[in-house]
Image (cartoon, rainbow, N blue to C red; front, side, top):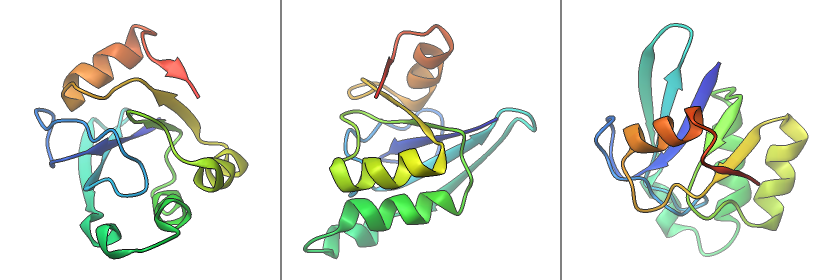
Length: 112
């Protein structure tokens, strides 16, 4: 299973980014291989409009099964993600990536 996190950094101790479309990074954890990778999404800050759907399309390239974020994607981005079958979990705002992972494992996050 691949889990994508919206983050402000590139490791387990990074703070979660509550935003989706303009998240600074995606941290991708492959649970089966125990591998962590990241994608730099900071260019999205320059998008005047449409950052959410563009970010959703980029995320799809990593083929995650799960997305963990703070506030959740906006309407257009949520539609794109739901069509791809990605399950979205929200409520991971003011914590680290590791804490968000633990919250997901213990079913403490809300499904979007």
